[in-house]
Length: 222
Length: 201
Image (cartoon, rainbow over all chains, first blue to last red; front, top):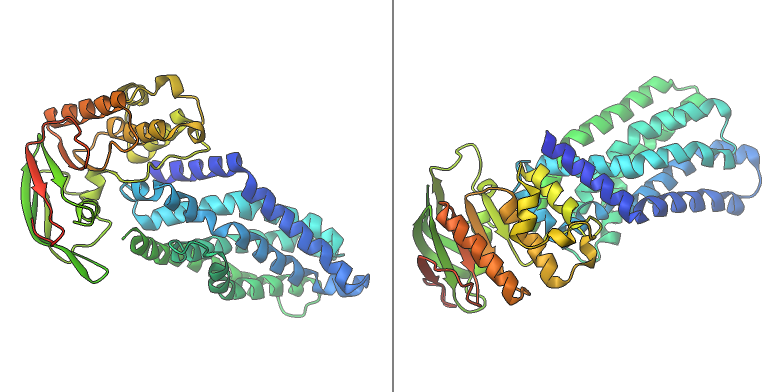
């Protein structure tokens, strides 16, 4: 367990020191959400109606920017080989690195979402659902991202391929995250049914994605 | 402790790199791998570390920790140093000590003459200094088998001496060292294993 925690702690420290990933993701999130109303016009009712979708899609894209870094740097400087010879199985290594990504990227994006929601005239009663669904959905985004990052590890410029691989896998998170928010804003479908499915998706991803990511990592160490 | 390798075959990209490779070594001994480029020295070391699956044959460490895989009882030093540029020398070693399990950071710094650099970010180190930091892992965490792939690359004469001292100390303390190298390391290895480009030893 201490090896698991030390890996998370190191990744968080590196994310903080290098700084680029967090600010890029937050900046990108802000820019995407800020320019969409300029394109759509100042119809407040329209903005309020599509706000959940915009906030979620922009969050996915912003998270995607930093996902390829999950394994890339460690692979490039040889750290991954040494980590592989450590006491942790690669499955837990992948889980630790995805958790560190969630803490360093997923949580800041979740916390930024309510501020950006003001720009989109999101109804006040939906703010808590926004934070709740994003806090629930972002672990799935990081863990699926780790899977994509592991698969595209050896491919120099894997960024675009990574987006093609991973964005389709993000659709269930997107659909049920937005559905849970719409249930509160417009009804009539119950909030809980969508939200519980979102929880289930996240739990399944957190368990299964590290196994697949570890298999991909083994191939890449070969 | 005894490391036995039996009829090992390595296939890379459809080509047989080596075949029917067998040798055994006891604790307190060292093997020097020699051979031209492409003869499979690195592949053999990576296979021992568990990165490449063996196409045939068997690798067995007798008398080691039965719970742990061979890789977990090995130090692998490859072409890359595994050094994080954003962390200081001290922090790099502190992470390895914590992750790989224990070790005295101060003595590892001393073994590779890094004490005066301990608070410098690893990104500012020269190639040779970064190499020494990569090698300091050997002294930091105690593992019986050392797999060294060209460990003396970019080291100056003084640092080579530190490396050969570390290797000799490890062998004398009952460890095993398998090193692939073109430049002599200044260590008396008990065996030399010659790999030919054709694939026989």
